[in-house]
Length: 141
Image (cartoon, rainbow, N blue to C red; front, side, top):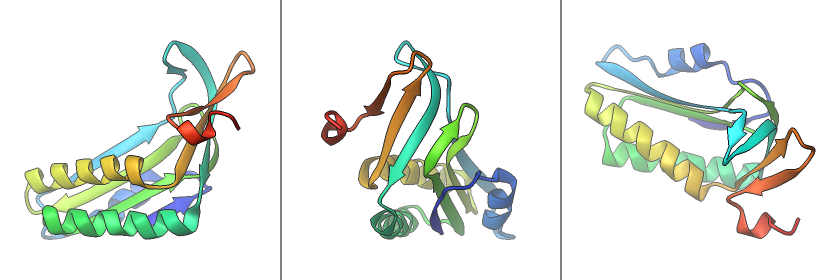
């Protein structure tokens, strides 16, 4: 499962979705909004997402991970909109019979999501300035 959400990510509910009686373990990655980046104090983040493409590509990423690292269940949710410090911005969970597959699949999913999906992050700083992060096309917006 892959989803984009403008609502808070409830990690306990997502963890329950990837539980499987055949799993020896669950590997989870939780990306949280932090208050510092590259020496600047961050007040909040804003994610813009082109959801139709992001959802299609996100599902492809999970399918690819399944082919590379056989697992039983996987889920990923990425936030959109304005997020405050301490909010969960992205959640990935994978259950597998063995930890190696769970770790590798979870890592693959988050790494590919960050590179391939049309999701743009804007940081809002306490000094009133803001800027797009790792977005060459957004630099002049």
